[in-house]
Amino acid sequence: MKNVNILRANGVNIDKSLELFGDIETYNETLATFLSEIDEKIANIKKYKEVADMANYAILVHSLKSDAKYFGFDKLAELSYQHELESKANNIYYIYEHFDELMNEIYRVLNIVRRYFGQEPIKREVTNLFVKDKAILVVDDSNVISSFIKKIFNDVYDVIIAKDGVEALTIVQTNGRIVAMLLDLNMPNVNGFQVLEYFEANNLFDKIPVSIITGLGNEDFIKKAREYPIVDVLRKPFNERDIKNVVEKTVKIN
Image (cartoon, rainbow, N blue to C red; front, side, top):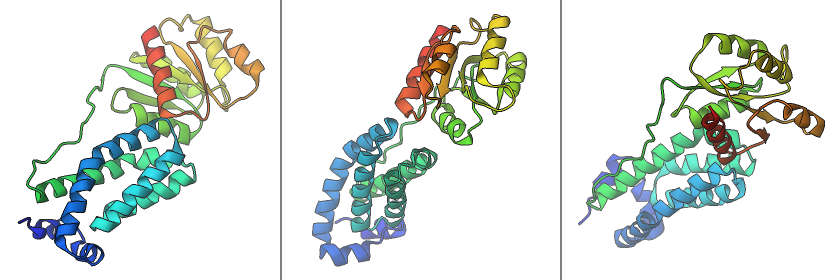
């Protein structure tokens, strides 16, 4: 017989759950179904986060919240509910900032359940591709955008942030590890076009490939930017898949 003390010792509100399910046998059967389906749900949550599909993301974390409440996983229910609220508000930046927290709790709960069923624990897959000698320079005066990009790539590259063109040019002149630059056009002090002019005057495009990230909708500005040997232009708002594609393309040009 399964030991419910394993659940209680790990903070599972089993007594409240049994009020809903009625008996431990029904609880166990339903929990086994949850365990068999959770991998697919996790995969879809990750997929919708990556493409910034907040509508479907909200549906899945709502379902996760309901499951967590039924089974007595109170912390997971709370975190899922917050993700549901923020995704319904289309707050993609909150989702990225707190996604690891949600995933860590999901895997913590999964290992409690697996132990309860007498199964071996699982380890969350961790991407360990960090290249210490390579850096990406993100030049953008928006803390939201720069934090978003840093969150995506921080496990792969050293992500360096510059708030304006002056800071960017200083970093370019002193840091030899930069393999790509993501450049906003509309910034204070020295703007993106002035940075492009500096790159052209100093033959830097071959050394540091540049892609533009911009919220400017004026086609004349985009056309002007393409007069320089940039790799690509990505318009804001963008999702994880978009920025990954642009960075991969930009780094490969190096």
